[in-house]
Length: 498
Image (cartoon, rainbow, N blue to C red; front, side, top):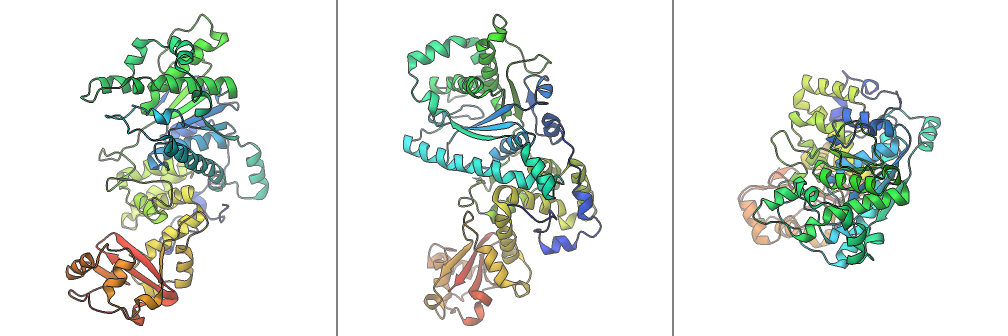
């Protein structure tokens, strides 16, 4: 997934033409100075709390850090992306990165940040979700390295080789391995005896649910002990000393830190609880990241009420790109710091240029391109940009259609954005047949109503009302067999007639 030496070579052509006042060399510094990973994360606004400030010194030498993910769906979403990027930052600084898939805890459900209990998933669904997320996380942490290093100036082969020698390992584990075969009596005698009910009740995730009408089940109440035991197990088996998580995970992470304190021989007799912050040295630490919201106070990660998934088969690269492109001016710098690896000082240069010509939305285009390539790779970004040109470009006749069609076709891991249909089945047939065959409308009745309302376009040309009996002619088919359909402002289909 190595990219061109120019980090913005894949940005839309019109954006590149609008950037003469700021050369790429200003935006992308060639400095590759190594810095403390906690300082880097804080500069990017990616730290909410540290269980102890001593963690700064702790990360000056390579250590092991883990992030837990429950397989509640077959894909992670952009709400999970902040923590994944945090884990990638640790790996880039030479720390071993563990992704823990909650094959066991996923059957329980974490109450943190929720007002109701999760619906239970079957063992088969959990297993399938765990496998899919394992592949997703492994791929992200692998592909993210060349992406990140291309932004930090390591562009020649020698520098790239030197950088990879200091990379931390990637490990993916499933807590079903140690929790799956543990009986209730064993759990109570080994884990339960280390817990104090008063401390468990003081956790915000517990208090908020106890005060709600839905209450809290014993299963959910026990979740923090399961997560704490995960941390203890990784600490003992793999030398893991840091857990990453969202700010709503702070209570669960503190439970793990306290369990490790009590189990650690070096701290025998000194197992009193310590608060968050301070400078005390610990055998283990927690680093939490903020839960992102928009400037308007809305929860980050939703598009029209739907989750924005990292799986390109669930949210296409085009939809993913458009999600970030819609970022407001108030949020764009915050998101650029998090979802790109461009140095922060260079990001302020991008924002300055954006403010000089805000109608060009330079900062949003950089953000959308960076986030899309980070998650979906160069192929996904090419597809997103091609689809953006096809659906929102002013003149389809000016596009290099063979190249555009090739980009829309996707790759081995990016599903095609084209709807392939047999030309003989639709040419010289009523237009509503194509509108339904492409999936733009579910029925001819819906298609005809939309045509009558004047909301349907073919290749950028609006269909006249009551023209649903009009046939699809050879003049409607662009070079290469492409036909671009649109309904309203945001529903599109790119059809390839073969």
